[in-house]
Image (cartoon, rainbow, N blue to C red; front, side, top):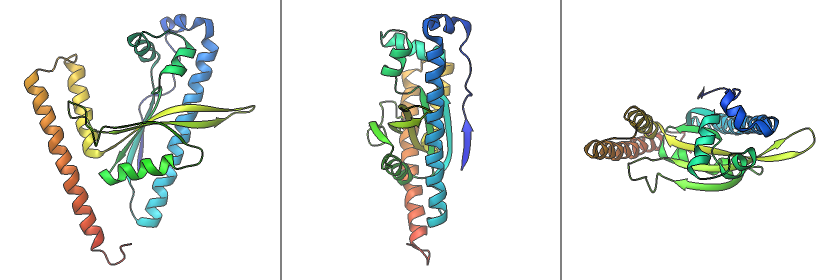
Length: 226
């Protein structure tokens, strides 16, 4: 399993600091909590993956990525939602400031990892959006969880939200290229190309299912299969 960071903890640029100037210390405090929550989720997932490797000779997690939402993106999202621009509004209304993306080998691994994570005593499931069973109109597939993780500080324990996106390698391949195409064309993808992207997503789904089937047949044919 590889671990790939998306970005490091950075100080907000001057224009962002100006917006949060009345409570800039609280902003940094909250960002530190989100960063700690990402570390907690990563550690839990790494331990689960290592356990599966030892017990079943199988790593359900291919690799992980993680990121903290950039200050500019936080403000833009609050503005889109017509919400106040403040630290309190940020922590109360946004569920994806801290994000961990888990890339799995097979579809069954996606649900296995999700179930094992939320079944832990100190993990609280807040929200589930299953875009695998019910894909978005453009073909996007992924399992999105929002979980609450306790962060133990010197004087208190603080629950912090983390969005965990879990998908297969094939789903991630499609999502990454779709995002890149939309970014380069400023979201103005022609209708014909949208349909082709949707067809690619459906093809990838069939490939995922076939690879899962092949893996299961090979596993069942091994002498020490449990």
